[in-house]
Image (tube, rainbow, N blue to C red; front, side):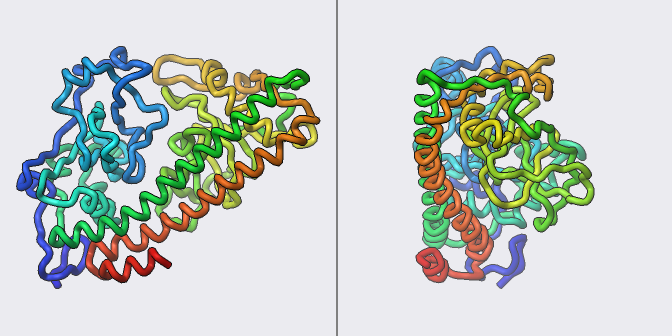
Length: 412
């Protein structure tokens, strides 16, 4: 069993590079369009999605807030359109993150700031998306990225990634096991999204009925604080710190979170149940709101504001839903130049929110609680599935365990 980047692998596995693998199957590694080919003014409210660095999650494309282009621009930039099985990387920032393109995302644009990897018929692309997620492969990409303060990736660096692959039937079998876990995680995400949408619809109807109460935010909060400047660490046992990318679609995703040294961030506020998190800087993410419902200790960085309601003055859960409904108003409160928009504590304090009358809150809460509980169960299951996938991935990719063993673990 020869030693490789991912450890010792079976003799029959092939060593190559990403560029050689793509080229042998008629594929390639290509940079997305430059800014001169697609301007900010070209984006439209409705049209063909354009995948940007902020839309790249953990092997998935994040569709919340995705930019869009016209069909005419898509035709003009047809060489940059995505096909099923492509993999998209960010050219700068979190360069180790990648997203596998699902069939329903065919024809979307590989946007500015991204790189597209296409394999042709040389490999199972879903297997390769997992191979590129191996911890040692991700670490290799980070080590070789250019730039001290902002890592940058190009076609040469990505093409030089060492690749070790089993025969195609084994690739397909490994991809099927890991893909089954990811498909179930995606289904749970859909359940979470639908339960949250239903809960928001129930709240909105109740808040629109006569007798609803309106409050100034400053009069009903007990904490309204921006987060802290973190001291990052790779030690996963340290305090988790949430950033702007964690807040999307009304909920908190822990996938883009990092760790911070708790004793190096004096004044860090630990999140409490029913806290509301508000993105307070930046273009495109300013004003995004999420409710925190989890028990684990976390804090936020200086780009996020914590809003904690006084339960003696207002129902915290209904107040949180009211803030979700006010996202567009919150975004409008921001001030500053293009790219530097900020939302101060004073500006946020001026927000007015509307909640149902007290008697309706009593009838509404069981409905909201039931929907939230269903969504939380799906989230909890997904956390277990992610942990199982991340445990199996490096062991399957390196051949340490075989598919049959992994299938038994998944069935269990």
